[in-house]
Length: 540
Ligand code: MSP
Image 1 (spheres, protein in one colour):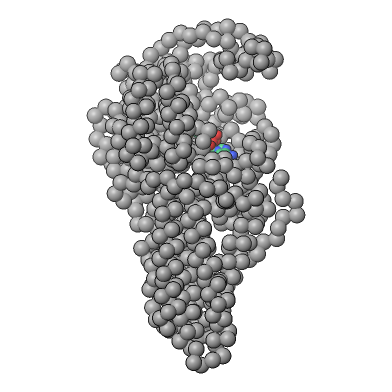
Image 2 (cartoon, rainbow, N blue to C red):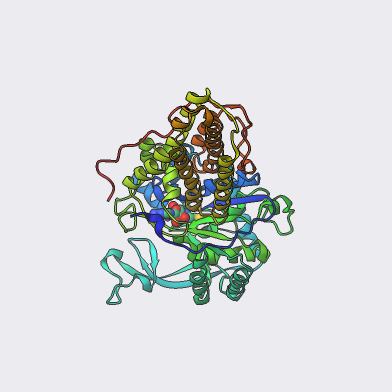
């Protein structure tokens, strides 16, 4: 099945203020090796960051790892190593993968860094001093085996806590709570205002209703601590060393603790920070509610952020396996490192960007990966590059001349149309649609070769001008194509430029007709996208 067939309504343009673009991703838990879902999100953010750099904007791209918490503590215990050591090992795997996949970030958010832990502590102290945090004793059912409090959600059909929870006892525990409920109506209003202004708080826009419903139903405050006796691997409360912060007050803060120039002190000079903020947060659909759509805006509000400074969310869908969820426990996780080794990092980047619609789910398939590469890259772009350069070498010793006007005019027209289609798609955060536009340009060029048959034109001296125009149009279109492909395929795009003997920087403003001068000498053709064999045993 082609995952691209689903039609999804266009979202309004994003709120890009001026020419700066601050983009973040979720920070990944370091309790296991990275899987294809992690890779997808980071490549998506990287492609958007590269696209904005291509537009000449100032870009700040932040990603990282979420190193604290119960799961990490438990995984480390199982292996008999200290959590710090365990986390360092897994973190290395993420860093190495991003290097391999050319995920090119400006700052690395690792939550055990002092820069972060100090910022979290200052925030907690400030909110505590301002009365936004309070201590309370609450009771509930506690599973001794799983070391967690249970809610009614954990009860089975007969209303009991099943045997998987082991011994369940009623316990009372003191914890810190953040005043969440008081901000419910403010958040509802903000969601509505943003949508009315055409700048929805969450994109794609079909998620807005989901978030709104969740906020409308929300009740109670947020428990933000764990007694150290239960969880030691976390950031200590600065005013109460018996407690650590729990999950979200640690992880979400990374977006500001690692942002340029943030200082949590009330009244601090935030000039540099405000130059960049608000960020666009790229996250998966599972962490929109409640973390990013409810807790985070309210945390920022409590810290004095203005309504305009509440960041928009770009919520992507999931890669599934045969329609089912991918998970460590099911043992069906797909290893991006192995795929990049087998097929090449850019093949993987291309597949992850082209076979899913931003916001929707898709099924991962190794066969599709090979098929997308062979169809779009090997057969179309690669073939076009190779035949164009070979023909130019054979008939014109690699020198392209303008030639007659009509063919070039057609080339100019299709290029302009595809660049417009491409930028509109990228501005809607839809790299798959942008790649479709780039692909249409390559298809048009290949059709031009079939239509004009340069090998026949070469035999007729009266057709010299026409042959020149065809060769020029192909080379010029390839130059534009390389620019369009560069956010997804930075290496291949550089390869195309070098074969065109075009050593200019990559800038979107150059994606317009007329860059190559009359008489330009092209480089040597070298196959760029060799065909891949279809895997014997594809994924389910
Ligand atoms: N640590 C938290 C996020 C804190 S952000 C302040 C977390 N980590 S995670 O490792 O579980 O997930 C990281 C990101 O990967 C999330 O955005 C999540 O949606 C995404 N994905 C996890 N599995 C995925 C797929 N199968 N497909 C696509 N993305 C998926 O949540």
